[in-house]
Length: 258
Image 1 (tube, rainbow, N blue to C red):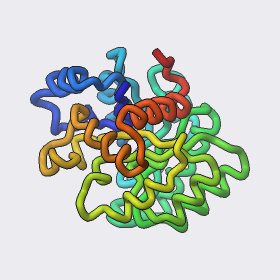
Image 2: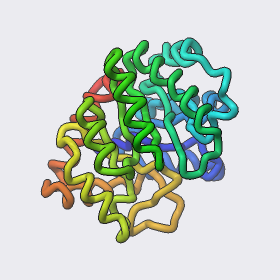
Image 3: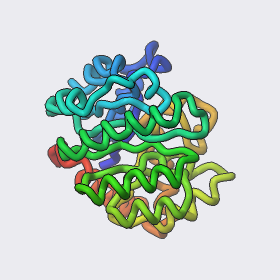
Image 4: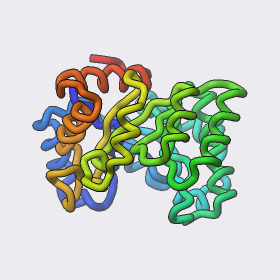
């Protein structure tokens, strides 16, 4: 089964043809999709898509949106997560590249998500960009107090942070960036990721893989990412599909495996 672990199907880029995009995904063999919440005001749209049996969702606030979520509490996230169609906490984390929210506010909101992941047992979906040292420190310290599952989504940060996160049991997701000509450094890190903790994603509508680069991304474009992962790891495409499926269900264990 091909599984797209990170889609944004509620995004306005799909307002004209959302159901057609979902139909193309199914026709391309995508068996499951996880629709990711970027901010709490969008949660109703995110959750509505998860009424379909092959689409699940998360709840959370992206670090870009942290400035508008200063009153978001762990208890609120836990309450949303009581819905059985919610299978993860996030997308959350730190983004020091754009700094669209003050860094201290990003960290405060991130802590609420960490606590919610710990309390619910659901995986934490982590976005990190140019925040390697702070991210590593925050997650190591939190994990040492009480462990929780975490996913380093669309991982493009450094090798040192990857090693630190692997040491505390993190999963990693590989996106279309792995297919980009200039992403040799990303491919080197993918080659060293824990073999049983790698999953795949499109992060659609962003980051369309080669040969679709430059277009609006969609879940139907997942196969080139799986094939590139197989090439990097020295696996067959079938092996990569099986391994990433196993890793996905080990991480998102609220989803019943068919």
